[in-house]
Image (cartoon, rainbow, N blue to C red; front, side):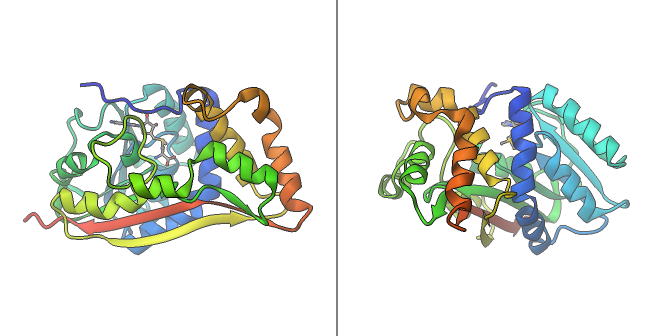
Length: 285
Ligand SMILES: C[S@@+](CC[C@H](N)C(=O)[O-])C[C@H]1O[C@@H](n2cnc3c(N)ncnc32)[C@H](O)[C@@H]1O
């Protein structure tokens, strides 16, 4: 079965973008997993593990007596993940290549986690239902996903930042209207964060607890400007096809520099879209 909807590409540059993204969002994900109860000694499954950032973060939470298994359908990115885990000295972090729905996975995990993965799978509730069978009774299900209803933005808003935001995300009222539209559109789900509650319930789990944060920064050293440029670069072919961006006008190679200048000269701030975490426990006995 092939349900690869990963539109961000599979290049080295995309791998670097994932690492940059973790620089901005890692602290939020750590707080979320701690709130969800991920802790010492646990055996944790990380799905859609990418370049390994979440697996390594979880390793720091479960420690030497815990274990982490990362799964990704992109075998190449797992080479980067393995090298990074090894360099960090984590011998209890392993990675498996393949589609998470098709791999034979252990059935004694204490938790299954993932970040920016449910938005890329067409039937997230049925995936969670499947993953619950890989958990011990009472195991934790914890996913951290964006909701792009409110685009990345700057305070104060400038005409340049407003235009750049509009390339990244359609207008808010469109997104609000689309929330319940069925069937789901092809491609990634931009409102996965606010759909986590409904997805968990549809998967047969108790309504999850939720946590909302947004990454925000200012000054010349905030890595968010580069992250914005790199994300648009990865999305460029798809956005161009949708007629949402004219590459000649966007001048992608100078986007971060222009955004940084616009924010820094006003002592303003740059804010990322909402990041929502949901956690629940399997009720299976
Ligand atoms: C946006 S990346 C997120 C990576 C990582 N979780 C992080 O937070 O940095 C999503 C990853 O999920 C993987 N992926 C998407 N669908 C998958 C599936 N059905 N099975 C396994 N991996 C999948 C992609 O190959 C990609 O590496």
